[in-house]
Image 1 (tube, one colour):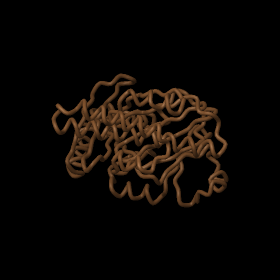
Image 2 (image 1 turned 30 degrees about the vertical axis):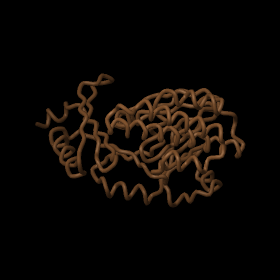
Image 3 (image 1 turned 30 degrees about the horizontal axis):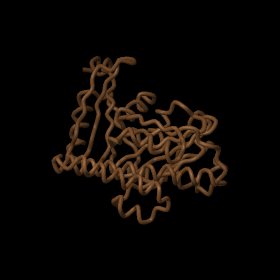
Image 4 (image 1 turned 90 degrees about the horizontal axis):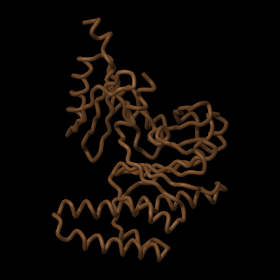
Length: 288
């Protein structure tokens, strides 16, 4: 048994909670080759814990990871505690993760402890911005956004370092409610026209597909606004001109959102689909 455990390849299990359900990915690698993969969905945390326990008993070299989803986190273009003080961040109240001795991600100690309390079986708890950072390809004058059902996480890079971060909540509002508070009439009309066209196109689709289509359009509208608001704040604080925008899609956005961004904000955009669970395991592989 000891020899079997010693020779066993590590199991990497990533998970996260979405709308009261739990999603998990169990992977095994031999060097850089994936030799086993299993995706699971659980109705409650108890079932998730049972699955993790059974896997861990079979293979003690099992590592569990998740990420913090809340707004109580951010990025700082330094690992120096003095920089945190300059930005008004109380260093005694946050846990920071330094990357390459150049920049850091932080979350509040309270949020970290609450996550550990909720998931005591988790070996690694990553900041949401780490999911963006590991997937970046360009790191100069570029904006990355990772939208999820709950939040949109934004990182802006300059000279290969994240210099701006923000998190927007994807509140349950309809496009019509948001339009009332939006100032740019041309953009509002564009989204209204798109909404009308999409509703016409899905009249013959069943109720679930129609609901999903309208929900996705609503999310695209929010993502567009989050990018616009982040750019405004970044430029107002003296940021350099952004040359490209990357959207790391995890929720099924349509490719035409990149056309909307280019037409209205005049910045080239690219939509890339990423898997949160696989990304978490990729980060964990660097730590085991």
